[in-house]
Image 1 (cartoon, rainbow, N blue to C red):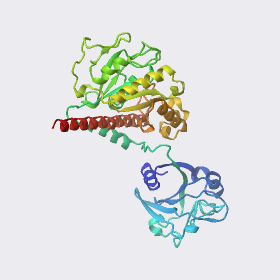
Image 2 (image 1 turned 180 degrees about the horizontal axis):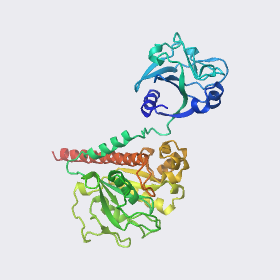
Image 3 (image 1 turned 30 degrees about the vertical axis):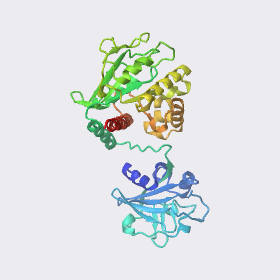
Image 4 (image 1 turned 180 degrees about the vertical axis):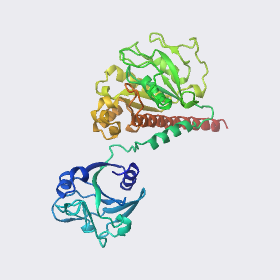
Amino acid sequence: ILTQSQQRTICAQLGRVKLQLLYKASIHGFTGAAFHQRCDNRSPTVSVGYNNSGFVFGGYTKQPFSQSGQYVNDDQAFLFTFDCENLIKYPVTSTAHAVKMIANSGPYFGETLVLVNASQAVAYSNPGNIYNFPAAQMHGNDLNLTECEVYQVEGKFSDREIYWDLLKRKELIESIKSYKPTVSSVTQPRVLLIGPVGAGKSSFFNSVNSVFRGHVTSQAISGSSSTSLTTQFRSYSVKDGREGKPLPIILCDTMGLEESKGAGLDIDDLSSILKGHLPDRYQFNPSAPLHSESHGYRTSPGLKDKIHCVAYVIDASKVSIMPKGLEEKLDAIRRKVNLMGIPQLVLLTKVDEACPLVKEDVRNVYKSGYIKDVMQEVGSRLGVPLSCIIPVKNYSEELELDMNCDILLLSAVIQMFRFVDNYFDEKSAEERLLRNSWH
């Protein structure tokens, strides 16, 4: 099968796309009938042949396959071969004859290259005036096929490019460890997690912590309950390993939001949190908001004490049944945060519970039309653009880490850093304006 790297290279040629396997000769049969049954009327496609000499070669066409016996015009068709991980491309030169629709063969590129020729596990090769290529470079003159595959090229529902491999996981971890805020007075930006009871705020911190601990752990109290399990304001620092140094982020956890008035997080307390007045482990009292005489109250907080980004944590499986009272509370919070110029994003949790396709494989998160609909609904209910909504899966019942869950969680942290950078850029610009006005 095409390696991740080869798939990326082909996709890079074609734009923001992904490849979906339609036909695999070793499973479906080295016959024209099997190929046409699975690939007719599907387009665009990438067809790939493999031989014993280790060559990986094939062609791309935007035209759907059929069994008409006719040539079809395709000015974007090309043949290709891989030299290690590099793609060598041979564009079509006679566009009117780019692809021929033959019943008893596999992919048939203009009398020049045919895969599964005459329903045999062989390729036909005749470089010339439709596509021109050196045969030795294309396939090493080995025309016996060990495999033939056809992929449909699908547009991604979002412009998000996620690579699901250990290299990507390692890259994300290194980026997080080496992150430095753009202002020297802050070493650990503070991200405030806000969300309804049971949406997974504490669980998100535990999950990120687990990735860096190397095993599933639960430092923050989390679970399911009708009222908030978090009763204190907590600032959690994530460590790089058990004895490691703290990472450049602090995740602040609050009481869960509740629908009824006088329950859950109080909007007045929220102002104190955003401005940096609240001490760690402050005990919330929904019936009496914090005041300046409270124990540990910071009277003149510095930039490092303030909140630099707000992340709303929303359960994907409950978006459609979000109570009106809760939606109104979130709206009031969002307006307050907006006025203070703090960037906001949404962590969409429990995507696996919301969609069976994602439950089967987390990597389907950006292929799922249902998750896209949920993201759009969250966006319109909270008034945030799609680009600010990040699907994640927290660790809840697992005992071992999963690479794909890690990649989603780490990507969310990277996104938080980008939003934090926006906040500091704005603050720096404001300070420059103030300095200029004094002069």
